[in-house]
Length: 369
Image 1 (cartoon, rainbow, N blue to C red):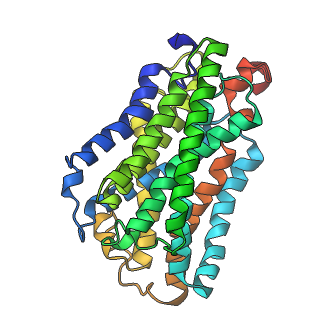
Image 2: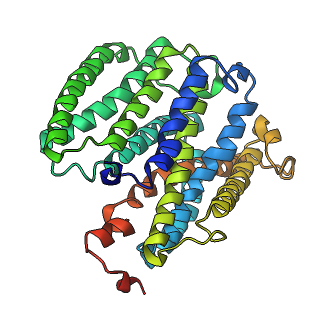
């Protein structure tokens, strides 16, 4: 039956990269085991290191996907990075003319939506073998997924969890949010029951229970739901949610690239880019690139956390803390994050999936030569 399951790579690789990691983080966080027991208000070193070494590195993994995908249009390979470079001065103008805190607040919610969207995307990838679904079935899955994550987010707001941490004070907290909790949980419950019924019918029809899709759904629900069970939400946000999101993306980009390479070459050599040593080079190189961009942002905004970065004080003291240069520093952060969220939606369409296009006969391997 495993051979019929829609694994991206294999049952053991997918389970390790996409399911075991979030469940392990949730277990460690829930029982206050290292590294979660090391984080206290006012000490941001671990959180900053995670953001640097994982989050900013995974943002640039999207370019690895762009330039290693044989189906990506040459025109777009130029437009994607060019639009990023042009976006920075445009955002700098907006930041300079408005309140950077307002933009930062909007970005927090954009981040949350992006995290949820990635989890939803994984479930969609694993749904390829489900067959045709009615509009009601598709809507049920969508409502279940988003409500299962919206409910914990609402609890963070209403409970005021995490307000001792400066970097979680961007939450918008109007009074009417308390009245949204019960409707959202009602949608959650109803959609869950309908989903179980639909999944039972699909299993009987296909004579196959879709293991990876339901594992993807279960781990996402547990990871986000676990936040509301803990008194220290930022801890789980930074490590269980953020780190899970980032590591899954790193693995997914590399696994898809390896699969594309195998589809064309039929073999992966040990010293190739798509070997295990190749993954380590890819991982370290992208983290280093993220470090460079993050350092420029922190130095130009005089952020007190620059001590944690490789460049140290190299840009410190050259007068970037005033006026337009300060706006430019914030723009690097906002533009890098927002650009990643926007273009990532275009990188995983079916027509850009080489293995899928070859298996369905939509393209021939001879067309790539």
